[in-house]
Structures are given as C-alpha cells and as structure tokens.
Image (tube, rainbow, N blue to C red; front, top):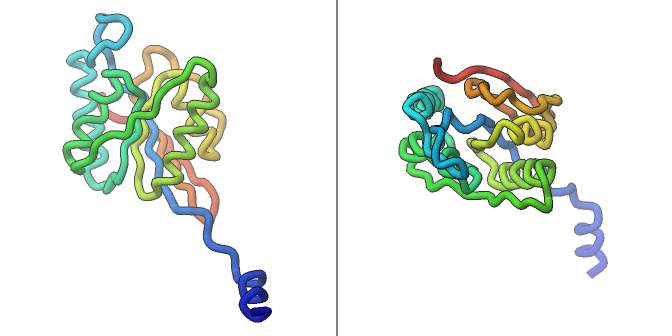
Length: 166
C-alpha cells in the first residue's frame, strides 16, 4: 500500500498543456439589415470563401462561433470542407468581452487540434490575448482581412498575423 501511495505521490505530472493551433478571425463583411443579426454581404460571402481556401490544408478540427448569423456564415465554407458543426459560444452581457474571450480561449485549449474562432471587431484582440498572444486591441469597424494563428504548446505561444482575401 505504501509503495502504491509513494508511486502516486512521486509520479511525473500529467501533461496538462494540450497542443492547440487557434486561428482567430473577425466575421466577414455584413449586410446593412437587419441591424441585430445581419447576414453576410456579397463581399462577406467572397471573404468567407477566401477563408476556406486559405485554410484548405489546415486540418481544422473544431470551429467556435458566437450565435450571430454573420459568424456562422463566415465559418460555413470551412465547416463544410471539414465536415464540422460549429460550436456556438454564447455572449453574455454580464461577463463582457474579457469573459467571452477567456471562455473562447479555454474552449479552444480544451478541444486541442486546430480550432477556428470567428469573432467580432471587439473580441478578436481579446481572444488572441487570452490565448497568450500580444495585445491587439479592438479592430477598426472597416477591418475584415486580419487573421491570427496562435500556436499554444509546451514550447510556449507563437503568433503569426496574416491577411485573408481581397
């Protein structure tokens, strides 16, 4: 019994850092109406297709979106390509952007693999930061092209900023 207890006490800790690659983008361009949850505009549909092309070899294993139509439509081509159903992460007024970003980052880490997160102008930067990346801040309302690839593994955090589409 003492031998079993000693082996449990002195065993090497389990690896708690599950490697994950997280691709964080803002939803694509949206139509003007309806104001509360507009669909993508024609430009947005083209950008969603460009995102799909850019991620064709990424082996995406999960997609996280907010419950807004523009986010699910942005993710749709990638979801179809990889046979995935996006996971909807609710946005709560009480928690604010920081809690939402922390929740998204925690879910991506839990899932592991390659995770696409489709956020908003005021959440993309916070999500990158919650994953251990640099301070990004809010995106301008006119910015839809930026994409961050955040790799979190035993070696730390690496971030690549790139652009998608036009």
